[in-house]
Length: 550
Ligand code: MN
Image 1 (tube, protein in one colour):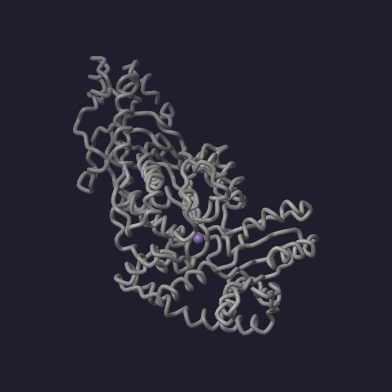
Image 2 (spheres, rainbow, N blue to C red):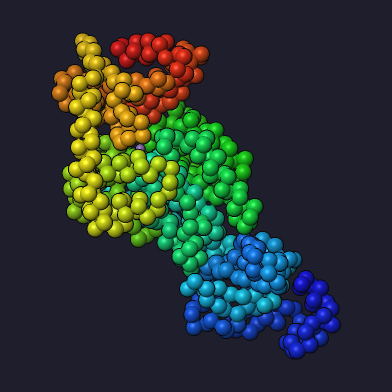
């Protein structure tokens, strides 16, 4: 079936195929020969079924089925599935490889209501023809990769400073889509992380559909996964790479672009990010967690990621949360995102962001009919749902509760919210009773025994439990409160405004002071976790309390 071989040995050809004969006799370039009517993949419709055309395209992927060989072809307008059959399970056109530019004569067919083509003949283009085609593809991809350049939803100096890097991520995402590169979106599994991921997903999926002219492409070229920890855990990267390596080996899929949202900025993300780099996987980060010391506008992870948006890098703080940044980024990726203008306010509600900019986002959401009360309930429901979704993608469930279908969202909120409130009220009764309060001159230290005020696996988990207990006492007491959820090998911490405490710095200090305790953790300045080895618990708590009481 080698095309060159056939071309040079006219005797091998089927005599009845007069066109082929003619080509062989006249030594006609097969590419010129295939000049019967031509269409782009995007132009094909059901009306073309059973008609034959000639196409030029690049081979993107090859999959051998138990029946035909299935090629994914790309011609700058769209990808298409192209089947070729010699006998069951046997590779057709074995001389053709991924990345080849081919000229093919194929008939149009329909399968599962998608348009496909069936390759009758196919030749690899070489030399000048190949190069000029590659150049054309590159020009098209570059043109399509240009992000949408438009104002942010609100006026903000901070956002303006972040704009150049955001535009670079938008371009990288669009480029991945238009060069048929899969995208893996990883996000923190809380309301903020889900909000940002949802906005990006809604921006990306329609473009993938457009690029491939096919509904099913959204499952092949895009995955979103929640991460339980507020960083890209090693278990997450193992999972992502396992699928990636398999897809690359089995189908010749390209190395994915990994987008980290509400994750990715910190030292704790580094190992996983560096593991991806070994496989040539590019990483873009949209985060607002404290990224460590900023030197010349750069932080630790910047040496390993392609682009990194984080307000700390330009001297700001965590208030412009990941859901806000990601929604603004989504608007640079796709120009049809107005429906999701309430997402920043939702994310800010979840992460309790404050400030002038946040108020402007609330004005936008209010105009769209989302009251602050409703957003609070919705954020609770998202956290509740996230607790049970765990590590699943659950694209449909997530899209509905985040607002793809607003009617359904309202139904879900009104179904869940009373239950959630009842559960939380019950837990608060417990924690109010069993919390130990230590009153100091300028602050109150509140301690909860994590194992004794939560039920394993149930909602709310310890972080949330400490958070709501903290809120309750913060309201009641005149002095600022530091709340601690004490576990066997961790302490969850919440700190009232007005106290000069940074949990990330405490983690750093403890690491230095207690090298035997295997200290880890972090988070935000006033909300985070210190992790340690259980054997070191007493020492860690002693040192930690000393710092919190200062
Ligand atoms: Mn966040």
